Image (cartoon, rainbow, N blue to C red; front, top):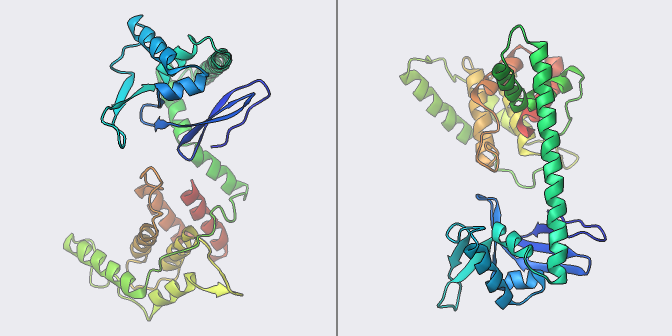
Length: 329
């Protein structure tokens, strides 16, 4: 994350695991433990002394004062960590302690820090107040609009749903206005191929599972000719030395479309196409987002499969863009 500053401002930014503290006099780099879970950072007293242009003795005095005055409790705001070649643990202080000490230090850097912290706090409070006012205005408007139907709490719940599915409203508008991005994904340098042998193994596994449940017959997965190999070769094709489908998402979308639209099987084209679609994404590490949340749910996949099956072949490009938009969101 990049850091920016004005002539008289101070900023803290993260760069490759380190924190960069910017002042009018230049840049100060500190290696900081970033605690994302608790939304804080941890500094030693030595680092705090460097941050505020003071001595470690004064940092010890101020931190002890913060705890003895009851401003913060010691147990929840410090950590002990052992480091290499050290028999004693190093004591780390969290952001709350750092800010409290910053308001006590009388050095020029401490004064500068206090001005910066006060400005940031004021901006956050103003922004929070504006957001609360906006939320109340939205609730009031919705309540007025549906006063004969919804209670205030029902209106609040409805706004929550509207916010949660904000990507849905955007995609539907883009679809209506033919503004779905043509290539919402970036080219992938290395992609793992799905071979016909691997595809047939996956199809056989699905067939056995469905037949055991009584959800498929012997006709399920009965291939017409070499349709699977043809489609898998199609998504890997190049033109002028350049891949026709340049990303995992584009190849997965094409695989889903052709498996359903070309009817390579006597029965089960939609189910098999959906299976190979998710199998290809999973094989290339694209089935889940970085936080391990799914990129789409079961109902979305069912809707896509049905849309492809019922769509006019002339709408292929539009349907492909819709699949890619879903994957990108």
